[in-house]
Image (cartoon, rainbow, N blue to C red; front, side):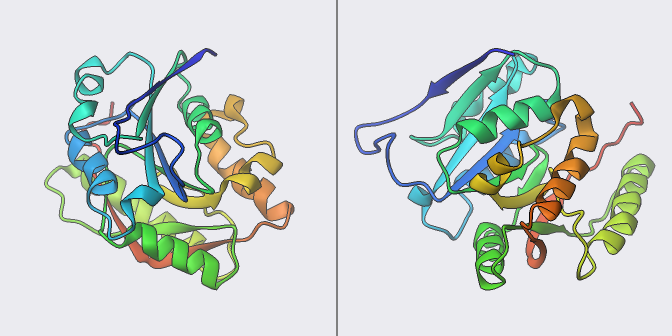
Length: 227
């Protein structure tokens, strides 16, 4: 796996500015409105903007959207090229390159409410947690396939969002401390999407509790195709 970082900066923004939150995503599955989704993190949060960096990990397979990233990325945000088709490997590369104390992992078809980052961080710190998962809000869907995906997710979330549950790593929207991630070895990328659950298990076993921040809300654009 080869990675190459491309950073954007201006005279008014040093690349060494203090970062508290690194939002990490990929462009593997952009669906219909990735720029709108990314903008909700880079320009839509009621959180100090200089405390947030966005890292978008790309692999050259979504050139149309990759070429338009400058429309939403700010000075200090970054793209990271990773020559891999393994989605979890791309996330791992972005997390390891992040400058933030906290990692917020999300997808390019997820839109965040303006207080999402603040709610996740407040909940994690108030409860003395190593991180917290955001809440996916129900939405009206026109496509039968999208309604199916939404129903499947919400039924599953009703189980793992209960108090005391540990299965709280979801790439839709979860925040965790970078040092906790690194201390347990990060994602087992060879397990592909099962790596989300195994990371949650490793954090749980190592004594890094995660929580469910119900007030941190996101909106997920569901698939309209079984493909």
